[in-house]
Image 1 (tube, rainbow, N blue to C red):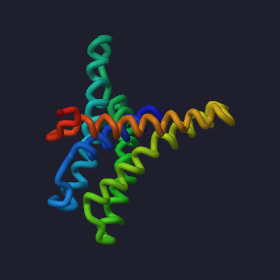
Image 2: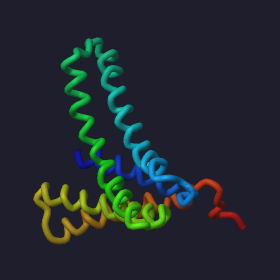
Image 3: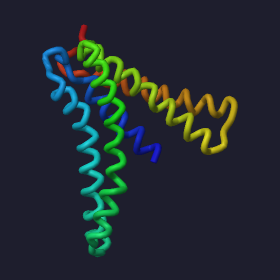
Image 4: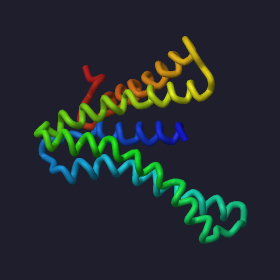
Length: 159
């Protein structure tokens, strides 16, 4: 489950990092950009189940579909923290560009938290637990670095 959370977090973080022009958008536009990657991954995960059933020649039953939707829909909840930050900061009059910077900062810290939680659940302590947190933070920072380098409209390695 933690791996799914990290993948979803990196996906919406990447979408937020590469988009430009936040200050010309409305609240609903920014919310849609946050929800887009999460909804796309949710839909892709739902689509893989019938495909797998076809490969094994098994027939997916209605109860199985409902269980699959219920199981995968919990990851739609990952949109709540960034949307809550968006709502609170926008209500306080913070610019959308600054709101996105805050959300990205939280997104960078998130893999560190989940790495620490996974390490703790695995029974790690001391330096090994610290390394789990550091690995997660490094993953978040790497995502930020790659997205910044690959941002459309920029030439990071141009002479």
